[in-house]
Every structure is written in structure tokens, then in C-alpha cells.
Length: 77
Image 1 (cartoon, helix red, strand yellow):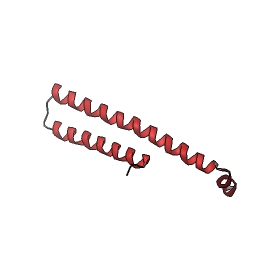
Image 2 (cartoon, one colour):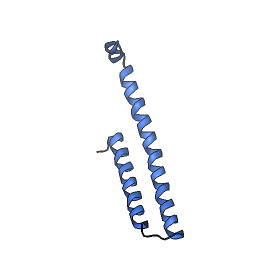
Image 3 (cartoon, one colour):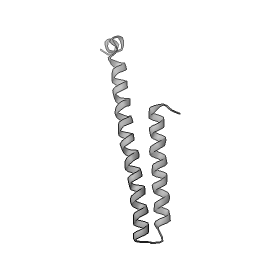
Image 4 (cartoon, helix red, strand yellow):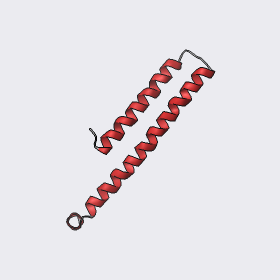
């Protein structure tokens, strides 16, 4: 069964579909991370607390991780 799928090219189509789904998911995740960063900035202006710099740092780390995952899945690195 697997040999037939490899021979007919269906395996290549499945890999493409999975990679496209992961790429689209990670684009949405990156947009979500940017929205979270913006929300943390607004929260820090509205309600300044001592943990605000740490939350900004964690939001920046989340953006970096989401971009790194996106680039890895797309094959840039």
C-alpha cells in the first residue's frame, strides 16, 4: 500500500498538504503572538506593575519562537 502511494505521487501531495497546513497555522500563531505583545504593551501603560518588564520580555520571546518555527517549517533555515 505504501509502495503504491509512493509510486503514484500521493505521498508527495500529502507532504505538501501537511507542510502547507503547518505553514498556515504558524502564520496565524505569529499574528497571535504579535497581538499578545500589543496587549501586554497596552496593559503596561494602563496598569503599571513591577512584573510588566518580565511580561514584555516573555511576549518578545514568544514572537521570536513563533518566527523561528515559521522559518523552520518553510525551509528558510
